[in-house]
Amino acid sequence: MSERAAPIACRPVTPDDAAAITDLFGANSICRGCWCMHWRVEKGGKSWQACWGEPNRRAFLKLLKQGQVQGALAFAEDKPVGWCNFGPREDFPRLKRSRVLAYKPTPQTWSVNCFFITAGWRKRGIAGALLKTAAKTAFDRGARVLEAYPTPQKPGQNLVAPFAWTGTRALFAKAGFKPSAENERVWVKKRR
Ligand SMILES: CC(C)(COP(=O)(O)OP(=O)(O)OC[C@H]1O[C@@H](n2cnc3c(N)ncnc32)[C@H](O)[C@@H]1OP(=O)(O)O)[C@@H](O)C(=O)NCCC(=O)NCCS
Image (tube, rainbow, N blue to C red; front, side, top):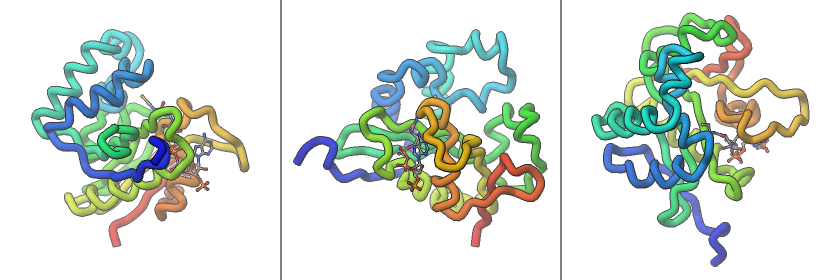
């Protein structure tokens, strides 16, 4: 079987996944700066620039070890090929500072806010599979509402992959998310 034909398995991240995360993020120039800390560091600008790279790596791996990171990983056999970040909205203070994503969440709202699929593995449903795992895990762990911020897109537009890191509209629409009445940039899905 060729590597690309390997079956994909998704599961929630655990505190023991530092090696898989390091393998996945360390190989990409944006991920090895951000380490999925974008929404966790309250301020942008200079404070964010100061965290880029090693400080973010240390902070993320510490949170992971402490069991404070929610997320889903995708594997092709043993190789980590995808990541979806999610968690209670309160874990992501930067969301509160975003004017474009201004929104008044109801209690127990969780946020699904970042994806990364390794180049060469994109457009074969891995983000969709990760979102399925993320939604199930979040609802099982107490979320009542899930919130997401799909990248703005013209009909039929192919987005430049790194700019679609919060996910695409098609991805969330397929999973049952809808634009909220309050802010069309914020899409929501309620627990049944
Ligand atoms: C955006 C991204 C997450 C999509 O992942 P993926 O596994 O290719 O997505 P899927 O195959 O599950 O596709 C889901 C839907 O989104 C659509 N889609 C995927 N990539 C797209 C793109 N670049 N432009 C437009 N639509 C796109 C798919 O067509 C599909 O819709 P469909 O079912 O109607 O065809 C992926 O390209 C990626 O990881 N980009 C890099 C993001 C990044 O840099 N993150 C790091 C931040 S530090």
